[in-house]
Length: 152
Image (cartoon, rainbow, N blue to C red; front, side):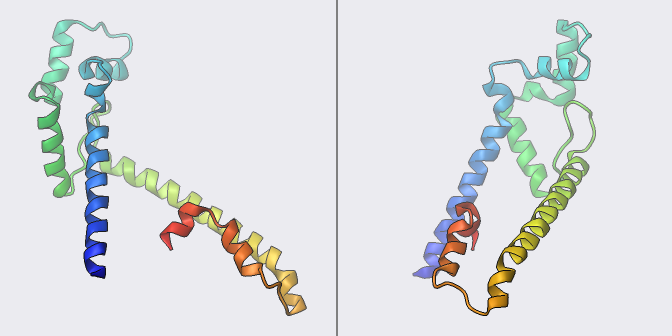
């Protein structure tokens, strides 16, 4: 019974992840702006938005296929490990994601180091005395943010 609940939880999480990915992937069309115009403005703000320039961008990016087709193609490529190409720069997305992940992990490690040092400094007087208060553990758990406690 317990494994059934775990499987249901994983399926729910996967369905939520897919829903968020689909919503984010459809944002250029949900914003009621032409994605080709947005890409043209991001690539070169001073270039005139002529019908020919917009058609060239649509053809280059495959925007004529429609949002659901593009989302399906991206999901298929994602299963093969290809995160795609940036619409603006034309470079692969994976190196940018890895660079951002590297910075995020460094910040997370630094924050964890500061938290451990601060916790050690705060608990040192209690350890030196050799006895703690009865509610010290409960107070420590109350100080932990809920989102962090939920992962434990």
